Length: 162
Image (cartoon, rainbow, N blue to C red):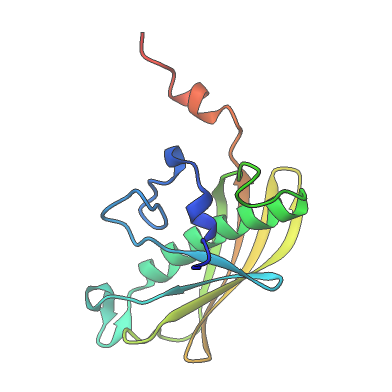
């Protein structure tokens, strides 16, 4: 049986993200999975994701780290709160801050592996450190501050029509 990704547990209302939403037919459909104490994802760039000859443009690197980071934040918070995937509702997170350090060009024909590690959980804030490698070469490092979306967000910002 195939393992479900963190993003597969998102409520439909939050599964429309361009980077990771399973319901966005034009999106990347990024998938993140537990791997020990880390959360990992693999992204295979398409030929049109080029920035320079044979290399990925930085926007794909940053957006992949952005979506993976918020998914990892949700997974880390879920585990921290002793909740179970598929049983308890998975909280959603948004990016408050994302820092990406580009260390080496990312080959267009490689698979980007992004690994996220938990740095800190403090209330609704989760800090995640990430490393992006291709063929065991570190190409980028990132750090994200993710903030949990309040449970009443949809009602508050999308009130029912009268």
